Length: 118
Image (cartoon, rainbow, N blue to C red; front, top):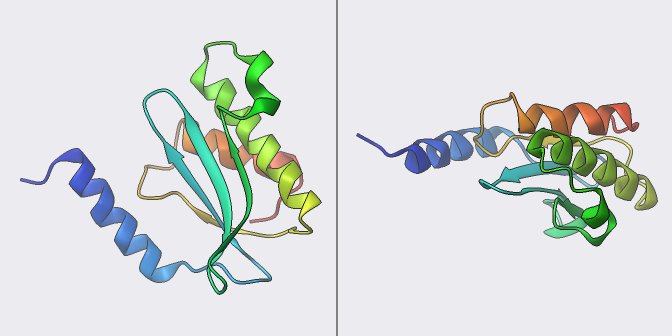
């Protein structure tokens, strides 16, 4: 029986077969650990990261409430802000094998509210 991590990696690989970021619509990928959440926008054609945000970012350091879902919302808003600065308006969302609820959904919703299209 596969472990939780192996099952997530299997889902991740299945999703990544179908998703690919282009120059016009890069891939917004989200990773969560037990304490933090990370989001980055990647152009898969060139293999470059266009924007990156995490709950460890200097921009979010003073706003720590201890609530992980609130941190995820702030990360979503920050990644959308950085995408706008990098002239990225639309992305493809990659949940990285995680179920789309909780902190993953909070990042996506906050990024949408901040003006990112996906």
